[in-house]
Image (cartoon, rainbow over all chains, first blue to last red; front, side, top):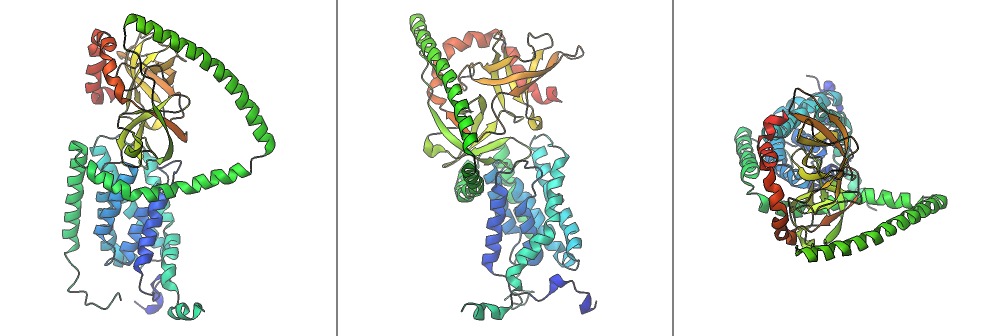
Length: 175
Length: 309
């Protein structure tokens, strides 16, 4: 492993601020609650952001955060309580387990891994619902996770922005 | 910050242990919610926490509506105005006739000694957003128990029944739409008074009349209204129009698909009707009718999972 082969995403970053994480989750929840026209095709932004932070900061964001967010999503959407909580804790676990591996790949390679993660979470939620007696809503439900994975490069660029800023800009920039 | 503490010591329980903990917690919640419905308290607390985000999420759409409102041309407005005025004229005509008919009915009812139907109380509400759940058809409205809305109340729009309030939080409520697979509504064919039960057909956005005999007297284009024999929905609200009938000699029942009359999946404003106070008034009227063919109504509903597949 030469240093030169490191993907640019592994450039040295500033430590993450708690505000960034909380803010990104709030925005993701907001995006999830937007009145979308076709819910099956819209990616689950909370799952995407959760996967991102679990991959990037596995020691700050983990199963507990995933579980709580899942509960909020469950209540906000009025579905079975625990459905998304279960899916998100499994997603967080898988993302944390894979986090070291995922970060070695370039962004599109990461997106492939994330597609698998998001599909897995969606599959867990679907299994829970089918077990509870719901009707299978059709294959469009796999489109949302795939679109979510396609958004991964953009999401990781945007969410890493606050950490990319050089440290001294903060002091001199506020004249 | 990230790398100061040695990673060997303070990582808490192993990930697998945590996973087992949270997964079993989720399973416990799932079972409690699906089987016993014990989680309503926790749900309403969390719902209150999510509420600001939900209202915030509806802002962009509201803002867009306002902006597009500024950009409407005057000609368009004038056209709409004339159209509305002519509609109003027709509606007021109908309203006058309705008033007269209502007075007449009230008089007749008094003569017959039947219970006088109470005027319906209703509360307007705005749909906040669709439930983000491809497995069911639900919307969340912006009125809750604080506004006097109770579970079970019928929800209508200007064209007919939209659904039923199935869960009430303090500031919002969940409405299960007619097209949800689990939602059933007692209906009556306007043309000949035939009673039936309409079930949601799920993803297609249609309704389905199940357990109607293959030779049932029903045609394409028949209008269905609520029959009111359940005491939940007031009678006479438009529900659906029959869109397609398949009579197959191999099956005892016809397959009847209906298109909902209301904008079940599209509207923005709805009316929540108060359904309480009316329950006691019905038995004298409804009991003899309900007893006539009890098997027709109750048995199929219990068997419905097998019959549907």
